[in-house]
Length: 355
Image (tube, rainbow, N blue to C red):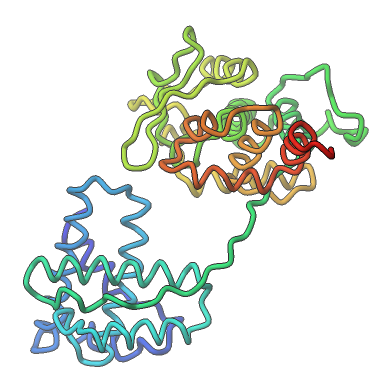
């Protein structure tokens, strides 16, 4: 993506945000030239520099997209008031945070936008364009800590069994509560047919059996699958690499997929029928469709949560689960001790003298 592309994206304001109507008018003036255009051009260059700095630091593209979206709203807010990015004073930073608090957005969304503003202000301060402490002291909204949604072991088994059937692999351990005509749902005439279904099965196995994030599954390469050694080389957040063991069903699904995988110039494991790597939006769509077929509302991260919870229930050490999932802090992993009722009961029964 070129600097011109980034600038254009930063100033294509959403029509669904009425407060930014004046900003869109000023953007049109910029395209026509004139003083207002020069002002916006300067703001765009500062934003471009910030995003370029993130690229140099090798921040993930997902994070950069979030910063870009938040910056677009911040710069629109400034333009709507005739301010430049260099005028992000403490008073203006507080005014922006106050308007965010009144917007009705979720606390997590507001906190992310304030974090983006603070990072941008810090960049401007390093460039000598803003006060160093302009964004200091702004309180983040309290975010209620919600427990992750987790599939039960039966639901995970049902989801993967259905995927196996559609991929032409009829397991012997079909759950008893499947519909009588379950096998009839195998329809190779669906676009992509059996080839697509085998790929979808691999994706579900990687998310549940290996606990991968959507983005990690999308960038997994053929050479990252060490079939003989029994593990994957996974590139996670911040370009951190970790080794993840996989289950026999996962490697069986991969072996079956590789026999029919469309030839592609790249080395990405999971590709579409048009030979392009899957995106995270593709992953969400595939997982949601798989869940819908068995009457479940599922998103990709639910399978990762289920993987961690079921490992904990099975007696896995919390430190090992941290390494397995690629969490930088064990604090993140400890949330699964609150999710896992089975683990809590087992720990209580084995440790408490009254149990």
